[in-house]
Length: 148
Length: 396
Image (cartoon, rainbow over all chains, first blue to last red; front, side, top):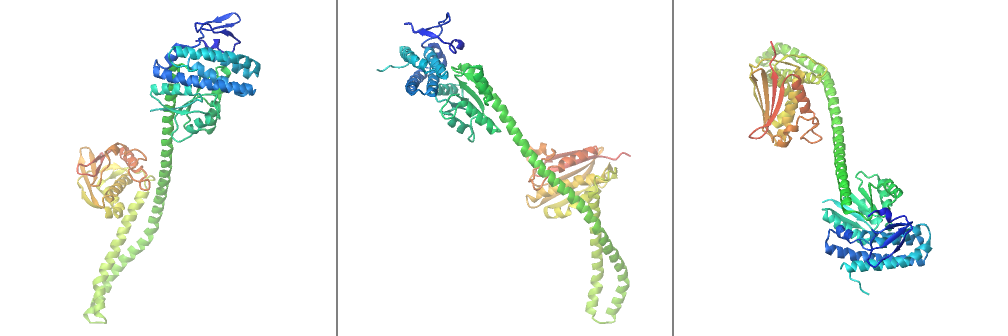
């Protein structure tokens, strides 16, 4: 995956039913970015299902915690904390194939770095949606169990 | 197993890295923030490689790198920054902070593995250089001590030559007067005998004087003669280096002189057995230098024998073809087999620091070789060491 396609751009995105997401940028279209890059996860963990399940659980738990911290930071207008939490979500998601989620978090991080809390707030809904899609994709692979 | 520190506040990444490193045969050590990482990296037996996240609580990865860099450690760990920050400027900042490598997340396992391997190679080379430097420092320290010791010995030599010179005059007076008294005693002795015969005065006392005086005078002359011999040997020995005279000399005589010089040492440690071939021909060389070699060998033998209390020192001379050979064998503990090849090295010694400079045998071998000869050593089957000198027979 070309990382330059993921960073430093203002992107529009939508999550289609098939789990692929399209990013539009000045007429460019990138179909490579996935809700879950399944092959990366399998390669990362050498196909070891026990390890995949263990790290998937940890990843979801960690992202969930960071989203909570991000929401708190937003309500407190704490720009540094917004940047830190979104940075953590970006890294944790990217590590485990959550490309779309990572990308949304990156946009929040960039906005926080620019001091634009408004954009950060506007992206929170997208972040939640991306996280739900990511968890669903993980659950579809049988790597996590979603409990309501 | 190579230990590697993983410092990342994000548990999934930390555990993922842990599993990868274990799979590659490393022993991961985990830290959840920069402070923990710095503590681990500055502790005794710290891991030599660290993978550091940039953004961590308490202390960020870059600050960890800066702290380590500022410490100017002799064995600095190899620091890999593993971070989401992927701009060129971030990379420059990271490397300038003291990081040795920079990898962007999400990492590719094979790339990370290779970069860790680079770190392992570099730290292994660094450790090797560090150990070498430590050995060299230790060696330099030993050499400095030995040189100071050598300097003291040299000063002692100069002092000995001075003392020998100063003693020479009073001994000459003692010796000369004793000779005159011996001569006078012959006349006095007649008068004393006459007094005894004629019952003059205390005859018992006169008898004692008559019986003992000659012996006493002979004793004084013998002792003076012996002092002269020692002084002469000492002066000859101390003159080495300033007198480069090459002349025909007898190896047996050189051994005798060296034994006189070492007599005081050897009398407590060795029973000396000399088996000289009196028919061996002359050799050509610097007598003082050959005596110096022999003194060194006798002193070594004395040290070896003192370790067992007392032992036997056998000195043999004979002719072997175009060479005259001297063997100096003791029945001491011998030389450890693994050190036999090294005993000729300068500064190598099997004695304690306070006893040996490690220069004696090295200088001895050089001196014998400068005479066209050879010097060998072996351990004897029944114990002890045997040194052999071979010097070429003087050409007619």
